[in-house]
Every structure is written in C-alpha cells, then in structure tokens.
Length: 65
Image 1 (tube, one colour):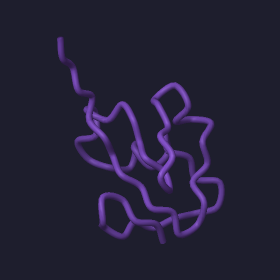
Image 2 (image 1 turned 60 degrees about the vertical axis):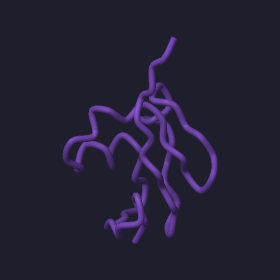
Image 3 (image 1 turned 135 degrees about the vertical axis):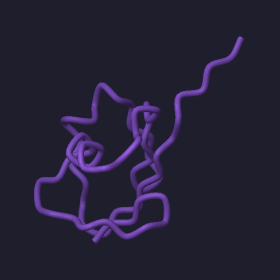
C-alpha cells in the first residue's frame, strides 16, 4: 500500500506516478507530486516509479503574477 493525500491506495511493483494518476479521479489539476518528500514535475511522471509504502501528496498547479 501507499498513502496518497493521507488515503491508502493499492500499490503494485513497477507502478509509476503516471499509472497512479490514471487510476484516480479528478487529478487534471496535478502538475507536481511530492513523493517521499521529493518534488517530481509532470514531465517525469511516466518515468518515476513509486516505491512500496511511499507517501505521496498531489500538488495543484498554482499560477500567479
């Protein structure tokens, strides 16, 4: 299992951030993910594997000026 925004989510070997986001609802806003304290941006989602027992936070895109 992994924790995504403090909720348990089933984990499997080889799971990437892109895989995780595909199975979740309403995550179009997500441009950055915090994976075990490390920030990962959307260009790296498909290449970043999630380790077992990971703690993940989904961070929204924030625009400002």
